[in-house]
Length: 124
Image 1 (cartoon, rainbow, N blue to C red):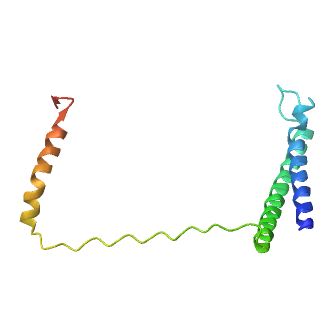
Image 2 (cartoon, one colour):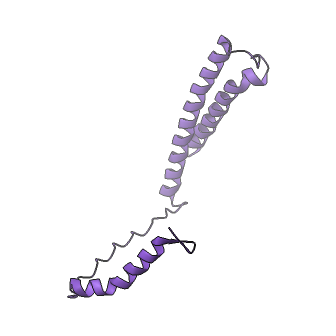
Image 3 (spheres, rainbow, N blue to C red):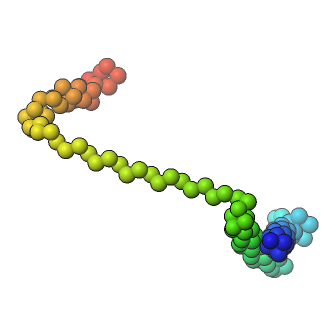
């Protein structure tokens, strides 16, 4: 466990070093604001980006290893979601004929038609 913690700390330090390399030319004033990036700035920024990406990947890997170790030791409990219930099947039609259905839906269709033809109390 201590080795994993030390590795995580080293990875975080690498991440911070990479971020510093990326901002150093601008923070220290070696890169003029109004000019294109100079070759040393491009080199420092690119190197810092690479170191930061590797540090971030290492931090994530060590954090996952520490979490797994804590779960194995029983110090952290894993919450599992309850499986979502399957939707109930639609009830089978109970013998309603299409004529009865048309009769039941006629008032709804008429109300929708009336609503679509009026806008703010005015006909279109």
